Image 1 (tube, one colour):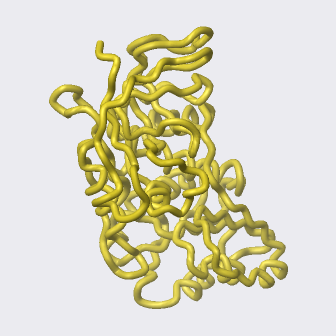
Image 2 (spheres, helix red, strand yellow):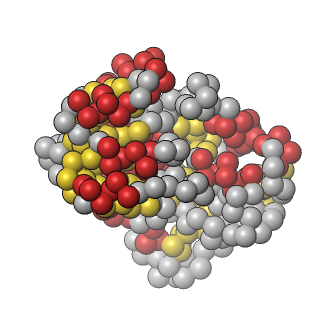
Length: 333
């Protein structure tokens, strides 16, 4: 086997069409407690766009290989890495801003972060579910503590995290309300949403309040969502936001409903992936893949994701944009 690998490096911050270069680099070697994985698929996330634009330039030294979704096959194990063997199919969230990312043919990772891929998912599907699934699970289970019978509002239900969150909330026994364009209502209700509200034709707050309010708000869209969440929250409601924002937010109204706010940057871990895998096996969670592109088209994938804006009425693919790292005819996904 060759000792080199193909990667797509971020070489400058800025526009997608000038930011990336495809190169050959030495293949990494697993250290103690690590596994070397042949990456068969990854995907593109909003964090990747922010990193490419330079939002996190203090955390990213160029040139850098970014990307965090990994689905692939173990090819080598380091000393003491006894949880996996070569040819095991795995999926995991690569640590953010730490070491090489997933836009590469091979990736080294601590075995504690790795889980066995659900047999019912292809590698493309698994890669498209990692970040959004982990984020939805951590937001709704570990932070909000959603319980059966509660009502959950998912902002941006047709997006990557939103589409996973609808399914996770439903699996937890919650009633699910989501915001989405009218053209996406059939899609989000098909995922399990009980009520879909068209945010593009008016203020959704009165419509949510007419339902009796909600126990949990999951913010995937930003803007004034945090400020307005208390208007729809039941007493002791919880808000989880995955959107970083520098805009001032007036949260005084949250005191009136004893609200709890959580700001989430999802973290890797095997337990969350195992929980998601169980939902997949039970038929209660499925990935939503809107497009699949080859590794060499990373710039196009970024442009495709960046070209859609819910607030500006522009369309992007529903769900995730996945990246097939190896040719589909060589490695069936």
